Length: 355
Image (cartoon, rainbow, N blue to C red; front, side, top):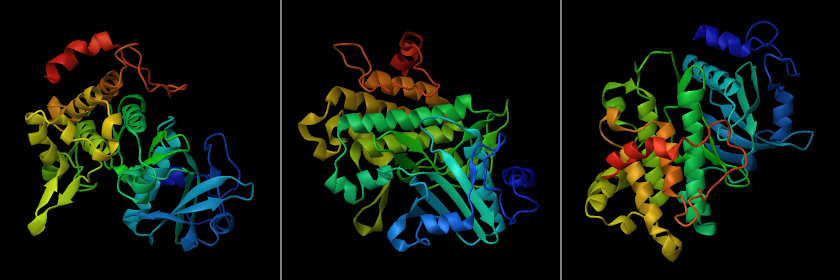
């Protein structure tokens, strides 16, 4: 891990905390901002610029001297743990490139300050559209929800199958899916991510992540694999469809996970009860059933029974396939490096699992 931190910060002159170079290099295609740059961009980290706050720190809106809109994550007071999480996020964001992953623009590391700079996402996070103020003022329709779900799935598929070494995110949730001006999903926040060496099926590690999204084998025994992300994505998919939180508080202080709420409804064939009631008649009920079935596959209690994220991408695309034209309804001009797997190649797999 120390080597990772050194690699992340080796573009600084001398040890960590020295003044960073201000220009990009061939080896490091991101910007090394000065603290003065980011103080100016965020109006001295003004509360009015605050976009959100989490376990790692606070995110602020900023505007550079060139007029570019950015998001700046200001990490909390530095500890050895925080230093490592900063290094992990910069390391991973610096090595991945995909249309459905949040792009790193640059960073600053000096003194006690650790700042990470990203592209600004005008539509903020998915959680604000499902449970926040925007959920009331700007309701996501069914096609938008499916576009977001497929985009997030493609970003995860890239991490699991295309990135080298493969990457497990470990904290897939609605607040870590950001939305650009066109509601394209961008998977964000890689502070808990794990790199998986080739040939390794799983790792045993300290549990990180968010309650309600954690796979059972990970929450109980700390066994983490790509399948844990698949489980978390399944929970997220149910959240997108229903606009319910992953854990709900019931009368008497009882807590119920969304998977436990959906399961009896699915068993009784009450698919329309799973959907966000605000979608009304505009909801495609056939697509709804297919998508919920995909979510149930992802949240299977046994990791070996869950699909891979490549399979999830194909299943979701086929779930929203227009029956009249046999074309995928939601297309993107840029496939981001992961094309749609052949439906005929996976049809038998899908049929056997979705009965």
